Length: 81
Image 1 (cartoon, rainbow, N blue to C red):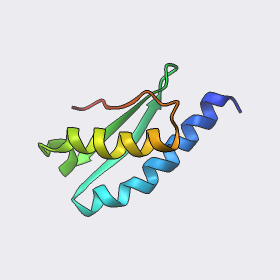
Image 2: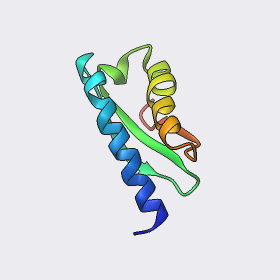
Image 3: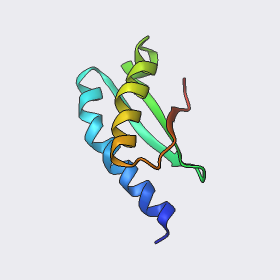
Image 4: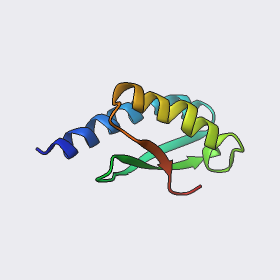
C-alpha cells in the first residue's frame, strides 16, 4: 500500500468520526478523494449542502480536525459548494 493510499484511509477514518455530528444537524459528509497535492475533496449532503454556515463548518470543523490529526493535509474542500 502506498503512502497516498494510507493517508486516504486515515482521512476517511477521521471523516467517519465527524459524520455523527453533522448527521445530528440533518447533514452529512462523504469522502470523494485525496489529491496528489494532499487536498481532501468531500461532498456535503443534506442540511449541510444548503446551510449558510456549511463553509464555516467545513473549514473550522472538518478541516481543522483532519489537519490536527494529519498536518500534511493542505486543505479540505467541498466539491458541491
